[in-house]
Each structure stands twice: as structure tokens, then as C-alpha cells.
Length: 634
Image (cartoon, rainbow, N blue to C red; front, side, top):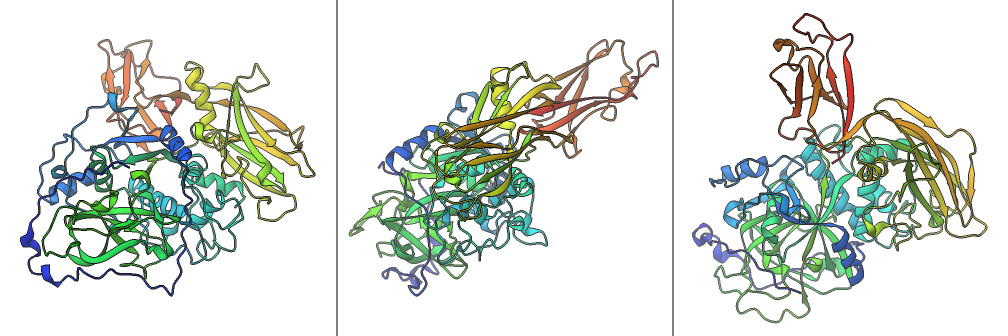
């Protein structure tokens, strides 16, 4: 384990002189042992951890957005970055680092204090339950995805009549990765679900707190529910290594931008291995963990903020020594009666396996607070409109034997040119891997509701990824109104008395209200085998990148006053107007149409209109308004 290179902090003792000696620095604190709390994060093997690092994007740099600019201005700091980054587009991965201009961040370029738990995007603290091993779904889903999606979409997840529409359901997520048992899950499986299936809202899943335990083996089937979850798919699953030279600064930049992140940690009984004392954070008396002891169990929690001026006098000398200053604010899923309103603070020094605090010994069994020094960020989509959906009816008594794949080809062949698991995100989730993810042969011999007799379920899967897979290798194919063939495969990986049946299959273009059904040849049964069905549909939009520039070419010069946003305009899938630049050539028979400030979002459907009110110099007009559909896929 590498040592953590913590950033230097200017200490202003005078701010704390009136409370300096009121702190009890000698007694370690424990929580109420009369309450038993649950955890639920299964520890990764070294091989699993290597796979995560191989297949997830590593965060290399975080640009500051408008919220960070506001926070810096409130603290009186100068801002080095010229323009704030767009919400949802602040993070640069190690794969993209060479294509970006980087401004080096240091501690002086970031706010000294951030607390996102007070933002409207962050939901209230809740309790995962005393017998529910579901912490991954609470940290990654309820806290992180709720906050991060609400932040970029401007939603209030804290208060209001419709607040549960914006809160992510931990129950829905937990049951899709827990093998049908109340025995915990792997966090990367949880991230796989969010990347592929999205995340259903609290309001669409009943009893998400009280029913986690009693319904931990139930998959919530239902085409409408699964379709609604797709809106909350993450853009990228990413990790950040705090041990890199700019790791702490990047973590703080994410928090300063308003996001929250998740991490895994060793957990003893009731987190008693998190050794705490009372210190000062946010100018108040707070419990601060100053080191973590090794423990057998694992727990996932959420970082919601930090305070560079937090102080815990660990060595008891009454001085603000190196390693005693600065802490992260952590949200737990054990209710508001735990800790301070459900929160605890963690010294920066606790991220390392060895303390840097002078004259501190006897930290036997100390380990890094974050597993492998990593935190996890699910980059939210500003918006998401699936290009094509599949609505699939499946009958099974053994979901553990069930795998589902989607495929694509042109209509000249009856076999898919590209095919992938519905649970695939990177090579780590290829079909047949050792995973507990739904529809990838998860463990647990149960039907969809947790019983053992065959039953029907209808699910909605996103076909957009398979279309884009084909587009990446056939870039000129999707020029508009393309005849396409979409496939569904049901795999049963064991020949026995139980079979998996494909009972229905339809492909849906929701934007254009087009549905293509497979009406003949079903049901199909698989028993230790694979069955395949396909249907044809026209994919209407052109597939383009987000900086696409269009040229509208006219037979004759058009009047200058006709070149305006009332006659030439772009709307998104919700019919909102998009800001564009219109630039005619010298002869005014060609108009360049380009987005302003990257205003097109990835994974969004747009329509470009040329109005019949456009007039030529001779006074002629288009016979009708022309429309061109396009979909931004990268």
C-alpha cells in the first residue's frame, strides 16, 4: 500500500483559540452497542480489483463547474480556470487526458469547506435496516445517484411533494445483485446494474425501507418500471485513486462541484473499528475518525464534503500538528440517530496505512480507510433518451440459469453482426463471468418473485448500446431511416427439468411511436440451449457526435432576414429549443448550423427543422417544413 501524499494546509490557530482546550482528546468513543447495524459490501479479491481497474475509467482530472466558482468567490479566492465546466462534463478520464488542456489544481484553488449534504440535491439520511445487508445500494444508489442526477438535472431530492420521484430506490438495485440472499453484494455488480438497467425511483418501488428484508429475493418485473429506470442510467463508472499526486485534489474538486462519491471500508461490529474522538469540524464539536482497524466485514459509505480546517488533537499536545487537520464528511445509511445526524468525519490522515501525526503509537491493525485508496464515481447523464427499446416477456423457474443477449444486423442477414449481454459494461461483464447481476446467470435458484415455480415477467431493455456498437464499426450506415434488424437471445445454461421461455418480444421507438412486434414463432423454449428471435424496424435518426455541424443547402440564395432561429431551429426530445449558431455563406445558398457551447447532450434525440417560411431572393418558399432527426451518441 502506497503512502498517501496529503496536501499541505495553512493552519490558523487563532480561529480556534476560544475552544482549543475544551476538547476531550484522550478518550476513544464508541457507539450504542444495544443497536446492531448491518453492512453488506463483499470484499473484492485481488483479481477482482485488478479487473475493476482494467475496465472502469480512471479519473485523471476534474474541471471546476459553476458551483465551485460560486464557492470560491464566496471565500474570496481568485479563479485560475477561465470558464466553468458544464454540469455533467467536468471529469476527464486517463484515456482522454491527452486531448484536454489541464490547469493544475492545488489546495489554494479549491474551497476550504464543502458540505453537499445541505444541498437540495442530497436526500435525507435513512436507515438501511438492522437486518438488511444492502449498503452498496444505499451508498451508490440512494445517496450517490440521487444526488448526482438531481444536481445535473436541477431537481430537489430533499424536500417537496414529488421528492420520491427523484430519489433512487435501494431495494430495486439491491435485489438485482444479491443472488436472492440477504448476504451482501459486490459493489461493481451494483455499478453494472446502474450502467445497464439504470435505477428505478423510490416512488415507483413500494416499501423500499420496510420491505428490503422481506423482499430481498424479488425482482420487480414490469415493463413500465424497467423503462422508467433507464432514464437514470449512469454515463460512466469511474474510480479515483487518492494516492496519485493529484488524487486528493481531484476528490475535493468533485465534492466542490456538488457531487458525492462512494467508497468501501473495513467494518467491524457497528463500525467499531473506526476509532473516533471528539474534535472540531465546521466550527462545531463533531466525532472524527482518526484511524481504521482491519476487520473482516465490508461496508460502503458516501463522501459528501470536506473541511480543511477540521481539527482533532490526536496526540493530546494541544497543538494543530500535521495529520491532525482536515477531514472528509461521511454519510452512513444507519439512520439519523447514528453518529451526528447520520454522519461522521474522517481525518485525511486516516486514508493512509501509517499516520503522519507525531508522537502517535499503538495503532495496531491500522489499515487504509478506503479499500485500495479508491473512491467510486458514477457520472450522471444530464438527460437520457433511449434510441430503441426492447420489451421482452420471459418465463422461468430458475433465473440462475437465465442469460439474455441483444444483437443487431442489417436486414440482409438472419444472424446478428454484433451481439452483447444486456448486463455487459466493459469486458468484466461479458456473458458467463462470475457475476451476480440479473440476466447474467446470477446465483440463486428462484423465479422472478423469489419462488420456485415457473412464472412470467416482462422487462424493458435498452437496445441503444447494441446499435451504437454497430455504428462504431459502420460509421456511415446510420444516415437516417435505416432498415435494421434487432435480436433477442434467451440462454439456458443447464439442461434439466426447468426451461427458460421467450414468450414475447417487441422493439419500440418511443420518440416516433413506432412498435415492431414478433407475432409468430413464439413462445420459444430453451433448455441447456439458446433461442433467438428478431424483428425489423427503421432507425429514423442520423447518428452523430455532439459537435456535429450541419449544412443546409438551397437551390437559390435565400433572403438574409429568413436566416433566423424561427425558421431554422433544433428541438430536443421534449420539444425544448436548443441554442444554435446560423452562419450563411457569401451567396446565401448554404447555411451552417452548429451547437452553441456543446449544447447537444450525449444520448439525446434531436430534430432539426427548416421552416416553409424561409424565402428565396425571388420570393419563393419551401413547399413544406422539412425535418431531419439526429441522435447524439458520443
